[in-house]
Each structure stands twice: as C-alpha cells, then as structure tokens.
Amino acid sequence: MKLNARLCELHPASPWKIASTTGSAPHHPVIVELTDADGFIGLGEAAPSILFGEPAADVAEFCRRLDAGKFSFNNVPGSLAFLASLPSVPVAARCALNLALLDGAARRAGRPLHDFLGLGFHENQHVTSFSIGLDAPEIIREKVLAAANFPVLKLKVGDPCDPENFAALRSVAPEKPVRVDANEGWKTKEEALRHLEWLARDGRIQFVEQPLPRDVSTKDLAWLKARSPLLLFADESCHTVTDIERCAEGFHGVNVKLIKTGGVSRAHETLLAARRAGLKTMIGCMIETSVAISAAAHLAELADFLDVDGNLLITNDPFAGVTAEKGILSFANAKQKTGLRVSRRQIHSRNNST
Image 1 (tube, rainbow, N blue to C red):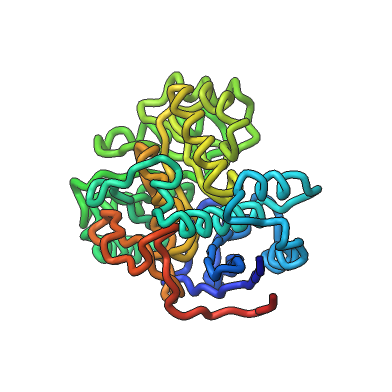
Image 2: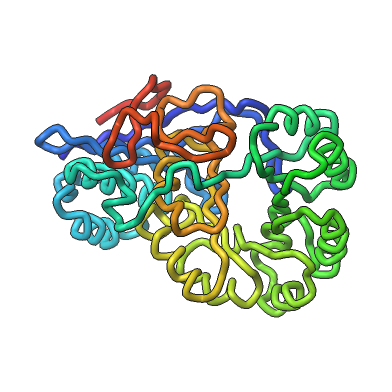
C-alpha cells in the first residue's frame, strides 16, 4: 500500500464569518490517497478544525509517517484497529484515513459506499440547505437571491445586526424555510431564550443550532430546551457517540460531522446512537471538497436534515462527486461509479510527498 498526504488550497467564494470566527483566507484541508498493489485507490479528506487545535500541515505529516503497509482495503476493521492502537492520533488524520480506507474497500468490492455500508441512497430525495454567513444586510440579500434555487436556507446569527440581517433575508425570500445557526453566539440561557422567542415569531424557522457555548452546564441546556419554542440542535456540543446522552437532555437533535467524529465509520455509529436516543439527526460539513461532501452524502439515509454545501462555498473544488442542483443531492452525473463516487478534476496543492 502506498500513502500520499497533501494540503489542498481552497478559495472561499466570499469571506466566511460566523459568531465564533471570521476569515477570507484560503482553507487547507488534508487530502489522503491510498493505493494498493492492484491499483485500487482510496481518497480521504479532513478539514482540520480549530475545535481540536490541529494544524493542517501537522496532520498531513502525521499521515505521511504512518506505516502504509498496515492498511488494507481487504481488511478495513483490522486497518482501523491499527489506527486506533496508535497514541495521539489527530482527529483530522483519523477522518481522512477512514474515508480513504472505505473508499478503496468499496471500490475493490465494486460498490458505492452507501451500499458497502448497508445503506441506500435515494436520488432526488435528499435535500441540503445553503448556508449564508454573517455579513452586511445588503450582502446577505445578494447571497439569498443567488441561492434562489435552494429550497432551504441556513442563516448564521450571533451578531448585534441579527434583526437587520434576518429582515434582509426575508425581504427577498419571504416564505422560504430557514435554519438558524448561532455557533455559540448567545452566552446565557436567558439571552438565548429571548432570541429564540423572537425567531419563533417568523413561523418558518425549522430549528436553531448551538444556541449556547459548548461548555455550559447540562442543567442550563435542559432549562432552555424545556422553554424553547423552536427545535434545538447540538453542533459544537456533539462530537462523537459519547456525547449523545448529554445531548439528549439539552437538545432535540444533533449535527453530526465527519471531521468531529473522525470519519464515516464513527459518524455512522453516532447517527444510529442519536436515533436510538430519540434525537433528530442532521449531517453537516465544513468548507471542504467533494471528497468529504460526497462521503457525507452516502450517509444521507440516516439524516432527517442535511447541510452538506461546503463544496459550494469554494471556487476551485479539485474533485467532482455528488451534486446539489436546486439543493437536491444526486450522484447521477458522477463518472466514478464505486466507492465515494468521486473523480479528480485538478488538484491545487502544496507539500506534495509520498
């Protein structure tokens, strides 16, 4: 087995601002490629998150130093067990390698990933929202108009200009369902409740993500859940299956992301655990290429809601896979028929080495 890890430079279509961070600089996800002796390839990706303090260059270097001979597309459980046995594995490395192993294994088996996992994928039935970051009201209005073909929008909040921003959205999309993401922007349960009551008056809000900081007490989360007029979803508060029990006390649903859980395998496990706990499920993403977005799409059958638009927020996606025309996920035009169903366009990378 050969292993290649590189950084891929992605350019945001516009500056991206949320309640906790802002920036217009390029993003640098780690792209991992595994190639076995028979020429089968497995692609993986991870967008290192500030949540874990993992610099992308360090993650790529960690992957390069691994003994690729320990990995096999014919023995994914054994390969993952080897990875789990290593000390201090970066979450992003675990994610990228998990995707690459599953992609290669599914390609060897001649099956798309969802089928390899025992899941279905229903063409023209899975719908993703389109995300609108914090910005000036006039810019938000322009972005909403540009996203007119998407049936559902997601608006970032947590700024003093929230009322003006929401009014700007409604001025050009008065009836469209909206999901709201506070990204920990409200600091107390009382403040959060005031905002939730204001938003509820709109009548077309599907749910609100992460109204409070991730480190607030379970008691405060439960207090807010009991009083909230809107459904509450955990994002920063939910990383892996170990968080599900606490989230069930303070939220109505969870936003599961590959980068938080450590890949498709653990995301699959977390989604199933959330459903068993009576929670609604959502699959989210970071700003990523079609490698990670397509991987997430293969789990769509397990989600009540999808927010997998990260590849639509960049101008230079080097891969092609799942599409989202009018917000509807489809692999119909994918050239690659197995694994993640991802093919290469053109890679803009740095730090290439094997």
